[in-house]
Length: 308
Image 1: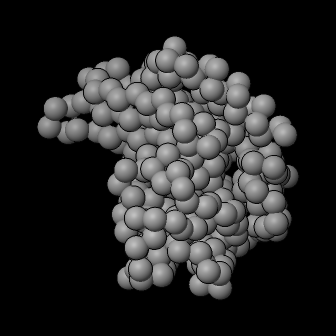
Image 2 (image 1 turned 30 degrees about the vertical axis):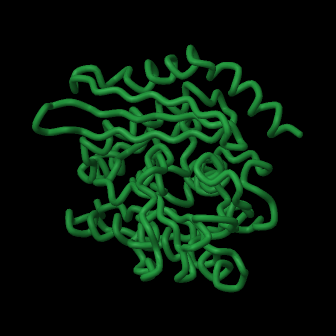
């Protein structure tokens, strides 16, 4: 019997295609035959609305989910931070690739004087907006949508002082400019810097193939972060940051999670170091701590604010 050709579904942006080709090469190196099929997602098409107005959950993944369920593609490659914490019935996480840079960066115009006074920065992320306002309450934050190439172009065309990007995305397609600073004070999105491959639950051939690409450390850390997100959110979008790191020497996990109000004025944070054995419920337990420290009321306020 001829070996099955694995059809790899992806968005058609430069970054998404880079990610798909990375997975394709890894599968080819293992001896699998592949074909890349690119589709446009609603998140790429509708650029004039803030993400949270679009019902953020799955806006970048829905089109590929449908293509997989319909049998047009066998697997799909995503930036893991774009993937809803609950996958559609019949679709499963097949592999999480080794994580890249987790940092957010500020791309600027060569002058950082505005950080000491008034300024305007751009981002389409509630999480980045809230954290920016928490640190720079006098600044103006404007909405910025589109793939990384589009956003970089919009930054150049407007009189904004800078825009916030995930370092990993710009590094992967060699778009990271000279004028940037690391925002090491900004807690990243859950699973930022990680790529995930999803497959159909009943497709043993593809699941066995992609399982060989899995990085266990990244899988564990992103599981903790996404569990934290899922427990807090309950299907609503909110300014949530989370980062789990494995310390090989001490065999521990360090977890930092945070929930902000939309305006950045309220911040509820949790910091934990636990033995690696406790990783499975770490995200859940950390979220419960956030709830106990005012997070329940804050999440209720966020939901009301976003409905307006």
